[in-house]
Length: 285
Figure (tube, one colour):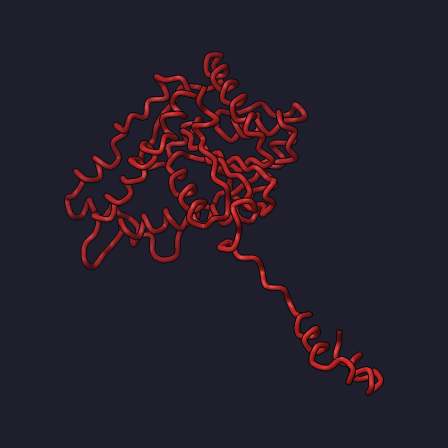
């Protein structure tokens, strides 16, 4: 109630409000937002994080796993089986590794695909995201990625330049070695996804980031800075996931590079924002 309305009322009516009336006025202010820490398990949307290899071989990761053309008949059959299994999860939203600020471009691609004007490319956004969303009749895919330069000077994060200047390239070569059991070029894609999303494998894969902390000294910390930004990037991705919905009836499928999966799952568990689903439940026979 506005104050000018109150002062124009009869004096006896104002007196009748008493302390209780003033209490009602005090309660008319903004309602405090519901915090994630207070979200009960039954109030959490379901979240399934699927870590995947980049099917189009973009070559932008520190360790790049390569795969043959997934548009071949054999790979298409494997992807069809993966789509069948993920469809059983019944996602109401599908979030993909696509720049959040480029949602309109993703919307246009999805619309063109559904209307027969776009042929699927090799990426997991196309081969898993678009195909599954269209099959389920979802209105769109959700772009949730952030991958910009962090604050500060680029050299503060350049662990490679630091290693070269100190002659510590042995550690760099070991870190960039692809010998981590990643061999989708020789495996069925579904089998590879089961392997990559197993808790022990994700834990081992994530552990490598702590080796980058040793690329630096007491004055320069390029490795630690770089890892810090890796965590920051995933926190920003997770922020976009949080903004999608708070409806406990929603079921969100996240299709992302496998390196992101441990942190996105960790943030989901620690925040209490989501009811985390086990991907192996949906990938296994």
